[in-house]
Length: 503
Image (cartoon, rainbow, N blue to C red; front, side, top):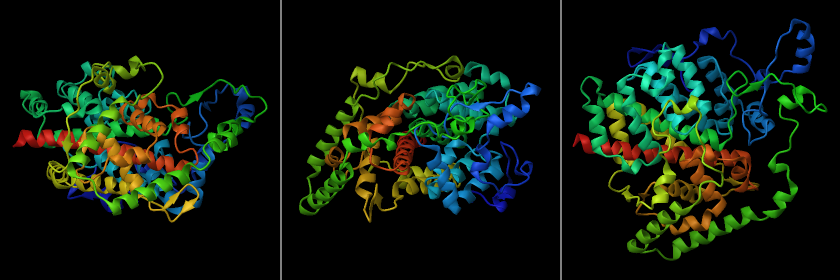
């Protein structure tokens, strides 16, 4: 479980406050995920036709636009741990969102993720409940993630938030408005964050933030920036009851029963394309051979510190030149853009102007030695939860690659994690960045950079273009790595700025 009855009642002597539907509203929390989704709407339409009832139909085929619904729902049938986690989440929140369903491929991680998010949003902390959800709205809106924005608009209202604030950031309290600059910089160019930005928030007279409040806000901002990346990277669809999740128009494909279309049985998926798989035949074997060769090179010789530094700078420069997307610029709708300032500000502007990203040496400021203790001191227990979540994503392995078993994937996982940090200018002195180009091909790099830096531009074609022989569960694992690496990178810059202000 991601929480326990004891935690619900008391957390270090404080009563818990719920932000969403209480568990007692759910009469029976023992259910199968398929029970929520499988309804033959044709029969419903026929039976209620005379009553004039309009019955909604899902716009998508399951929780994800990228992953066949059958694969997502299958895991909850065969994995009892996943089923238990789903039941606990539904009992606590009164809902089971599509993000959790997709994360269900990896129940160990999902458990840690839900526990952390539950604590950030619902347990005692420096910020009031409606502030927490409003900050989630601000962060998700920064990446035009309407899925997360709508989710937290509902929660914001449910915990007593003022509806006027939803008319725009300028209608929210001055204290939240001042957080807009931090939100913008963290989301797109965290290396520009300085102790002066922190000082402006902590010394704003009657609108000042306390250190504890600011830490809570920073964790929420980075959590939802990175979760927006995961949402777009997995093609998460709105639930049927949410905005953008349904239509009342009848289906156009008359040869299918409506329930077939609803359950995702009417369309082929990219893994079913025999030609596509033929074109990349041997992709996994080539990657495994490169991993083997790199390991042998490690054993034979070790590059000098000067050469390691040169390779990092080269990879950092090259990562800036990777094009994030071929499509035109995404213009946020008014419903989304009203929750943040300066919509033209983004990662792309920096690369076009040719600015230099300064190097952030982990040896000088790391999560393990500095950030963890700062968070834990100002927001008790959260540092520990975040650390467990980072470690879970980084170390998660089933020792498989596609159909191959007993494979050590640590080299590949480290290359993905370090490449993301490299894009943010973060360097590990003990890592040879020459390995990245050997393990991550161009299509994969495009996907990574788009999902991490401009997630709203992520397309199904990008998702399909990398690792075509790998399982969807493995691609979801990649997205977990990308999400957590991004969150940690943002946190490092924010916490370093806070530390510099304090000293």
